[in-house]
Amino acid sequence: MMSCRMRDSGDKALALKSLKAKIIRLNSTYYRSMWVDSGVQDHFGEEDPSLHHLIKERKGQVERTVHMILDKNGSPKTSALDILRVFAEHF
Image 1 (cartoon, rainbow, N blue to C red):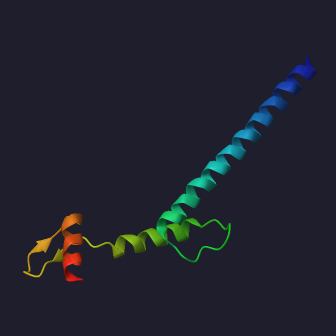
Image 2: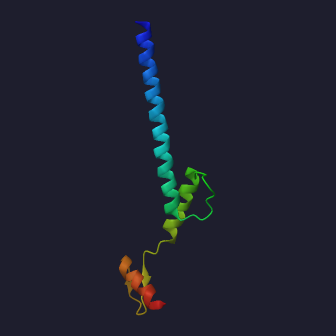
Image 3: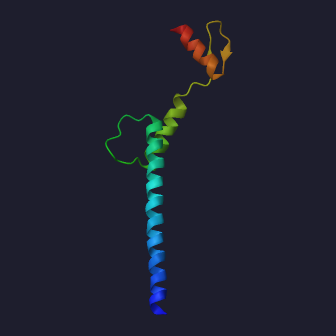
């Protein structure tokens, strides 16, 4: 009876350890993809970004996004396609 109970707890511990490793791996992959999407150039090797860095980069990305622009006639353009056209015409 005792060995069966120990085996069950051993199996549970092994399963939990396996699940923990899988969660850590998936979490690392998720944060690494966020780091690549943020466009940060100062990422060195295999270091994982901290939550602070991810939030800081996301805020900077949002602040740099153009939401409205005036064309050469002075009329406002708010759609992404219109903004792109105004920049293309300017250059």
